[in-house]
Structure formats: structure tokens, C-alpha cells
Length: 581
Image (cartoon, rainbow, N blue to C red):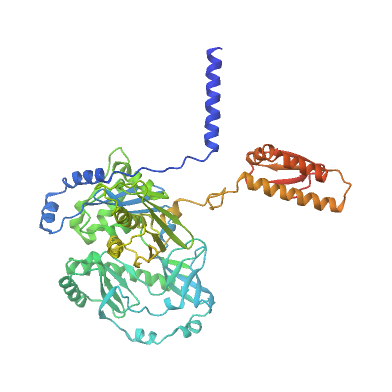
């Protein structure tokens, strides 16, 4: 064989192999657990390079401080933020350039399109594809939040008048066609439109301004009594307009009064702009949209506990510095521009950790695993021992050790995936009550710093833990993945055997119907199917088809096409080409 023909043959074989690989789905990524020990060691090395003043402040703290880093990857189509605690990814956010993720928190001037007395809700057109859902309870002035300790009340005459409104008055006060200002509290999820409220709030760096609420309070997450007493004095001293309220956020702990004054001034200025637009804009209109992911990250996560911020976009880095300068000039030194050739998320092993976030199976450090399944109604998480290895060789506490690791990892996965609603966790059954209580305590501690509200119930006698997590928008995976167009999200398709049985049943039914109408007619049918099905028909079911032809005096021909869906088939009249099934 000539050298040229051998080369051509190899190229053809290679091309055929590539075609075959492209036609098949990519192999399942089982993922390998990232070595957390290596990540922690790398984080400790980076922590040694902190500025001297930061090291001195850390030395005055009694407890050992974790090294926290905010890593921001800013690209034209997508922005991603990862919060690393000792090198391990603890929080992950993603936002596309379309801005669809910024619906939550937005303030809109809308028009009531429909009132549903059964649901006790209004449906409001705010300019989005689906009308917003507004429950009657969310139209009434908000009641005191149990997570807030009320310190001061700024009631106005107008506020006292509105307090007399009840749910029965809503249909008369807000008939169809009424313009109303609402804020989105939960984004559109699946087929549901956004959920809204008329009790508006504007979050700042250290406080939240509530223009239509007269309650001023402190977050109960601030537990130190001396600090709470100090913050109460600051709230009493602030000049807050009548009829408005504020909430001190956990980020305000330890901050001087001037920070709150500055934050309040910025929020009041923002509210004045919204109020002006409220008067002139015609419904439906967006009056205020939450800032992009980069700005939100600075507002919500850049606290004294964060040791440094790295961002790979120079313009966004300058914007962050400008934003931080308005609130805390000392924090400017933490913000740095990343300019290495290695992509920022690869440099800090975030990409590998993100890959694990979307796997169904997540491996635990000692060999166990958790299995995460998202359904429409709830999230199901199963804990398995897998290849767990006990260091001591004592099998007695193996189950408890796996469950301890699982509780910590489940809390992390919930935050990373941003999953919410009803979550059911099937821990491995534990006989001792103290072990069950220990797992409950560990789970509550792991979820304590979560921004979303959670409610965790004790482990039931069946070994099931039930919990709820506030869901403001779709999970991260919902934004990155779409339902498989081949199986329509079911994850399964009918087997060739099932299609063969179904097809033979249809053939027999159709032939009997035609024979009942014209017993003497010469009948010839053509069947179009997927190659996988025709392979079954030609091999294992060939005798059954011959028998069917003999019984009903019909001639069958088959044609296969790889482009046909495995569950699709057509039965045609071979003479006329008429479609029968």
C-alpha cells in the first residue's frame, strides 16, 4: 500500500471516530474530590502575605480567624464570584449579562390585571413576561419581623390611618386597573411569575431603609448584649424621616456612628430618586433595579472578616474601590487587581470545586457520599457510607462519622447550589439519641451564616431531617442547564424492547381495523423507526413479525434513520403513502 493511501485511510478512520464520538453524549463526569488539606495549606501561605496591620489586628482577637477571600471573575457575558474560606469554596454566585438575575429586589410601578378572591391575591403587570403575584397580606403594612428587635417607632398620621385597613378592604381599595408600586421578593421560578410586596426596602452596606415601615430595629444575629446596647443608642440618635424605618444589618456590628449616618444619607438620596420616578413614570415601569453582582458582593460580603478581594477586571476593580471609598476607606487596601496569565478561577482551584457543585454524587473526605436530586416539589438528599474508612478500625461510630461529614457538606452544597424550598435529608439511621442531637446541632451551626432564612427540624424516628430554606430565585443549576431536549428532562427514554412491543401492538390494532373494513384488500405497510429499534425487530422479534404477517395477510417493510428519536415511529400505507399511525 502506498504511503499516501495509508495516510488517507487513517484520516478517514479518525474522522469516522470523531463523528461517532460527537453523535454520542459526552461521558458522565464523576468528578474527583479536591484535596481540602492542600487547599487549606495554600490559603495559609497566602494569609502569611497579609499586610502587617491586618496581622496585628488578628493577633488581638481571641478566636482563631479563618482566612476569607472574595475571588471575582468578570467577563463580558458572565460575572462569577466565589467566597473562599481557608481556600475552600463556601459561596458561589453567577450572573449573566442579560440582567435577568437582577429582578429580585427591583422596585416596579405596575398595574393590577386581575384579583383572585380564592387565592386572596392580585396579579400585577410590571413589564415582565409573566404577571407578578401579590398576596393581600403583602399589601397590608408589614408586621414586626421576629428576626428583628424593634428599638424605635417613627409613626406618622398617614401610617396610623393605613393601619386600619384589613384584607376585606383590599378589593375595594385596589380594583383592577389600579396602579401600584411593588418590590420583587422572589424571582420567577419555572412557570411561576415573580412574587412581590408593597412593603419596600432598600439594603445598604450597614442598614436597610424601609420607606413605608416605621419600625427601627437590630438584627437578632448580633448576639453581644453590649454591642446591641451601643447600636440602640446609635439608632435613637439618627435623624430618620417620619414614617420610615431602618434595620441594622450584621455587617454594622462594631461600626462607628458615622458609618450609619453615611449609609442612611446614601439610601435616602436613592429613595428620593425613586419617589420622583414614581410620580412621572407610567405603569408598567422599573423604578429601581438591584446593582450588578460585583456591586452586590461588595455591599453584602465585603465585611471586616474578609481579608482580601481579587478581581481580574481593571475597570470593575476601580469601580469597587470607588464604592468602598464612600463607606470604608480602610477596606480599599484589601481590593487588588489580578493580572496573572492563569485564569483567576483556575489559579485558586475554584473551577474544580464548581464542577463538583453540579454533580449528583458528592464525595465526602473519608469515602462516603451524598446524592442530591432536585425535583419540582422538593430537594432530596441521601447520605451513603460508600467506601468509608474508619481510622481507628472501630466500626461502632462509622455511621456517626459519615453523618457528621455529610451535615457539613450538605450545608455547603445548599449554599453553593442556592437550592431552597423544602429539603429532605435521609441520614444513615442512628440508634443513639445523642448522635441525632449532635447532627442537628452541627447542621444548625453550619447553616447559621446563611443569608437565606432557614428552619431545621430534628431528625425523625425514620432518620429523616426536614428543613426549609428561603428561595428567592432559581437554583444555580437551573440557570446553567436546560432540560434535555431528547428526554424532555425525564432523564430516561423508553427501551428498544418497549418500543418494539408498542409498535407490534399498534401494527396488530391497525391491521385488524383495516381488515374489518375490507377483508380481501392486499395490504402492505411501511414502518419508519430508529436503528436501535429495528435491530431488535430483526433479531429477537423477527419470528413474531413473520407470524403477524401470516395471521393478517399483510406485507411489512421497515426503514431506519438515525435521525429518528428512539421513541418515535411511523406506520404508512406502502402504496398510497398515507400515514396510519
